[in-house]
Amino acid sequence: MSSHHHFLLLSCPSQGHLNPTLELAKKLTRADAHVTLATTVHGLRNITTLPAIENLSYATFSNGYDDGPDPTASYTVVMSEFKRVGSSTLTQLLTSLSTEGRPVTFLIYSILLPWAATVAREFHLPSAFLSIHSATSFAIYHSYFNTNNGLYPDKTTPPISIKLPGLPLFSSNEIPSFLLPDSPFVSVVPTFQEHIQTLEEDPNPVILANTFDELEQESIGAVDDMKVIPIGPLILSDRDPLQLNLFEKSTDYIQWLDTKPEKSVIYVSFGSMVVLQKKQIEEIFHGLLKTHRPFLWVIRKTEYQGEIKDFIETELNEEDGLIVPWCSQLEVLNHVSTGCFLTHCGWNSVLESLVAGVPVVGLPQFSDQMTNVKMVEEVWGNGVRAAVNGEGVVEREEVGRCLEVVMGGGEKGEEIRRKCEKWKGLGKGAMVEGAQGGSSHKNLEQFLERLG
Image (cartoon, rainbow, N blue to C red; front, side):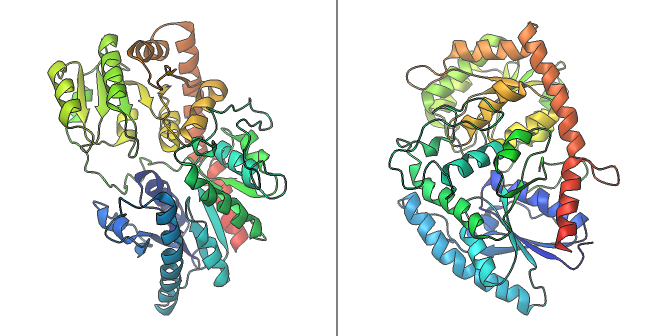
């Protein structure tokens, strides 16, 4: 079906970007396609091990900072350089692959790389946008930035709430945070605006979405002028456990989990990019201790040092909890002892908790995390959002209250756990491959069939 196709997949060099892209690459190779997965020169160099997968190769393009981003450069400067240099090196990559007798037949680009579609058009290549955020977040971006009736273009003060058909109102603290005028990340707005406008320029705009029909039907339908194709969850499966890792994981946490009772452990992780302030770490730590439940907390090496490390190690014993620099998240979520997930609600973490059937306590920090936790609490019902105080900190009492809700024996907790089991079944079902495949597998098959 796809043996004559060569897909080029482009990803930014972030843990949360690379692994969904790799999962899509695996699915394409299983459909007999050839795939080249490309990220930045610096990003590829930082990957600990490149998985050897039949029909998959790796390549690089430059972002102008091959030895790493200049820490003094603003986001606007870095992205401007990325667009200029990246376009040039992508052109070189496409030309090189063609010269080698491996011409690319389809380009798939991910978030923060809208200029890649422009290069594809110059080569008369069809392309698709891989949305690694939720369909709900993408629908909000589309509502803001589309040139037909968008809320944002040519307006100096964009609206701070939005209503999507079939979903509750999203207020200012529930939309992706960079859309707000006072956001420290407001400089990312032009890039997202360019994403939507680039898709509008495509005669056949295609969005491959890391979600599944049953989970986000209303949000998928809200984008009525573009084809949104749910092909997720793009998460690690038992069938193929290979990943792209930017961090070395610990080795002792599974043995520690093995010693704990079923559904007793609180798993805590804020992903690969969130940096919590010292006060927030202290409040989470004391909130965890007050639950008298064991916890496994991922704190990256760059954060676990100095005063933070000292005060935790002064009060922590291994019976109470374990701090690790990195781990295999799905391995932990699927462990029988894991009872809930205290998380920033990045989209990969939300999907992984859904498929594992683990309830969530959300402490969102920025970007689409605010939208994801809204859906978790109010639409899907598989967790709760922790409330912040006037300083934007979740206090220890609130941490304890939320953990008791999702892990305790009350009516609310039981309802959350029932919803978790529901979404676990639907999420796993969407991923099933073969003749009796699930919705996402069928969607990808139909997409490939239309390519010919």
